[in-house]
Each structure stands twice: as structure tokens, then as C-alpha cells.
Length: 232
Image (cartoon, rainbow, N blue to C red; front, top):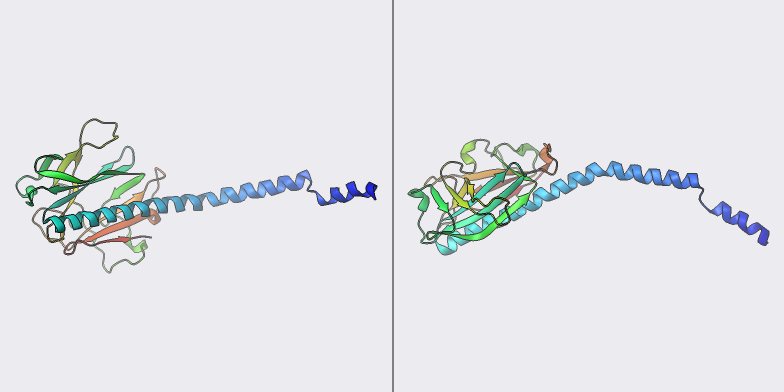
């Protein structure tokens, strides 16, 4: 009986060739799944960023209404390091300071306070309104706007802020802007009502990532200030 045991065990064991074949198959499956995992990571990144941005926009709106004041939300795109920064500031005395001076200067100051710290989102690019292929998004509204009039302000409101942790000691000038009014509405230019403000966010995990699937659109209703996020 004992003499037959090694033979029986050898038949139950895997040969070296069989083990190599299994290892090769596992490696091939892992390589094949990398694109899907990378795409999922990019999609998750941009969705998480859009959710955070939408939440901060809602906070800015609520603050404007509760404090009966004007609130400015600024965006800055660091194209070199593929980072986008966002900051929220408010008028201390409830007046629209940009009516007399479009540039609020370095904030915080005697007239303007920061109501939310500067937040930086890595590997995310700020996109222009209408440059995000809304046709590839779920729940898109009919006839989405596709011109610059509904974009973030780029020449009518501005301020500068020192970004914590930045390698540069100089303040960053925020020129991409929107403004919440005391009644909760939103503007992209001082004193001008608009039906909506729209911008896109694109994942830049890969330097040459051009996939429209990794883009979300953030849309703010000009009259109510409510924010919606459209995802692929």
C-alpha cells in the first residue's frame, strides 16, 4: 500500500508546466483589465470633484441668502501641474463691491472675507461652457447652451488669494468667477441677470486624456442658484 502512495500523490499534484500556464493566464487577465480600471479611476475622480464643487456652490448660495450679502466663487486652473483651485469669498457689509471695482484685490481684507478655504483638485481641468459634448451625458436638458455668454466670468470680476501649500509665495489671481446674489440667484457678470451658468470638469489622470466619458458638466440656474451635475 505504501509503495502506491507516492504515485497517487503525484497524479494529484500540478506539474510545473500547468502552473506556468495558470500564471500566464492570470497575468494576461490583469493586463486586459487595466484600461477598464484606469477609466473607472478617472470617472470616479471627476465625479468626486464635481460633487465637491456642487456642494460648495450650494454652501455659497445658502450663505448669500442667510447673510443677505454677495458671494463670489473663484476658480483658478494651474495648467502646468493639472490642478484646479476653488475659493469662496463674501462681502462683509452686504454690498456688491464689484459694481465699483471689478478687482477685489488680495483677500481676505476689510471688505471681503473668505467663507471657505481654498480647495485644490488634482488632475482635473476646468472646461469652457459648451466644450464638453453634452450629447454624451445622461439626463441632459433640451437644447443645452453652447456659447461663452453662459460661461464663468473671465473679465468682469477678480480677486487674489494666497494658496496654502503652494510652491509659489505670490498670491494667485482668480479671474474665472461667478457671483451669488442675496436672493440666491447667480450671475457671471456684475449687474447682469442670466438664465444659467455652465462649466465642465475633465479628468486629466493621463496627460493626453481626451475622453468625453471623463467629463462632467456643472450647471447653475441663474434665477434659483440651484446646481445640477450631468455625468456620462
